[in-house]
Amino acid sequence: MVFTGAGVSAESGVPTFRGEDGYWKKYRPEDLATQEAFARNPKLVWEWYDFRRSLLSTKKPNPAHLRIAEWERCFQSVHVVTQNVDGLHQRAGSQKVHCLHGDIWVTQCTACGQSERNLQTPLREIPPRCRCGGIQRPGVVWFGEPLPQDVWRQAEQVCAGAELMFVIGTSAVVYPAAGLPSLAKARGCFVVEINLEPTEFTARTDLFLRGRAGELLGAL
Ligand code: BJW
Ligand code: ZN
Image 1: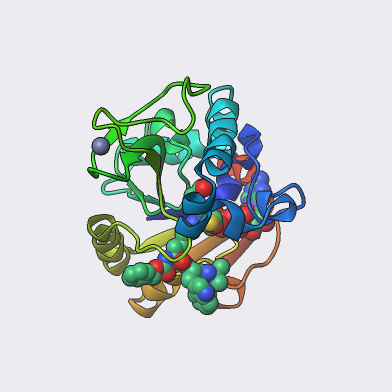
Image 2: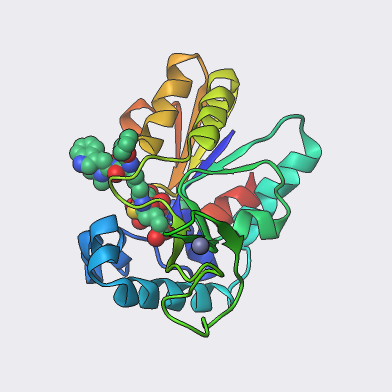
């Protein structure tokens, strides 16, 4: 099992959340990533997501994404459980990808609930509208929202059966996702953490490899 966070996409040029140039250094999560923020100012929230989608459309998977995708072709039963919404694991060729926090390329109608894939960058209309006339929201999981239950159950299952887990590029502070490495360890899994710096989880990891994910995975 490969469990990833924003750091795995950093070498693609995608900003993280809590790093030096991270989004949460410039903006307050409660202004951009909650239902309340969206209800107050859907245009502002959508402008931020539109900016991120446009940025992502110019980026590509890095050697970390590519190496992880290669593992799936070389070994039996490799699963990627990611907190990322950027779609870079899928673009690198990983097939068994479980997206805990949704997908930035999906929009969901706040009126009828209909989800659709929308790759338009920049968006022609902000906020985008559904066929039913309702306002659409980004298909991601905001603070205070439950994770998609089917994806969460699959992640727990993968975790419970994992022999080896890589925890890559996550600060491991956002729950419930951050609990997965501990869950795996409790089931006897060997956990390797790859990060630029120690995290909340590092004290419990079996092996800590300090450095850039793309470089380290390339060398493994
Ligand atoms: C590199 C690198 C390189 C850099 N190589 N490494 C108090 C206590 C406990 C919990 C809570 C609490 N108050 C509220 C909560 C719950 C809350 C939570 O956990 N908050 C904590 C922050 C305190 N969680 C939630 O609200 C979740 N839902 C929930 O709990 O629901 C309960 C519920 C049940 C039933 C009904 C209703 C509710 C939902 C969390 C959603 C998180 N959403 C976001 C935005 C997603 C959409 C979007 O992208 O816009 O998800 S926030 C943001 O953080 C994003 C990320 O997926 C997530 C995790 O961040 P990540 O990936 O770890 O990134 P960073 O930036 O933090 O770290 C990057 C790391 O990479 C760093 O360590 C670097 O060193 C490293 N790195 N370059 C290797 N090259
Ligand atoms: Zn609708």
